[in-house]
Image (cartoon, rainbow, N blue to C red):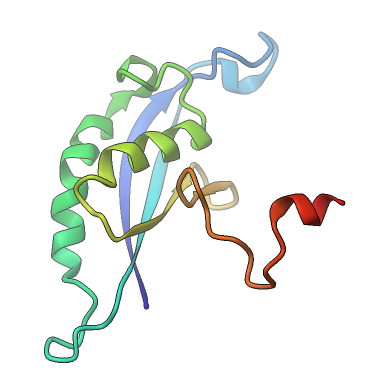
Length: 134
């Protein structure tokens, strides 16, 4: 079973690796949304996989490093794309939340990144990623 909890933080960033003429090269801000997914078995006595408050406690120190910040100044986020922010969150949250299965980072209501860790599971049809490409 999978649980999801959503958080929000406000932050500014610029993308230094894009061409100088790209709009995201300029300093701008977002109301970022982060969705944390965890997987586990439902405890028959408690009736849940885990307490949502435990997810919030695990994420709080990460949120404090991101909220109302210039993300480029956060160590490890010198190029704060959604992809890099998702990996950065994963790397800090996974030790606190071993059941972590997914980090979703949304910059806007139409643009988001989904990260499932460095070794995502194989597709349900059993084909490897290499087989898809052949």
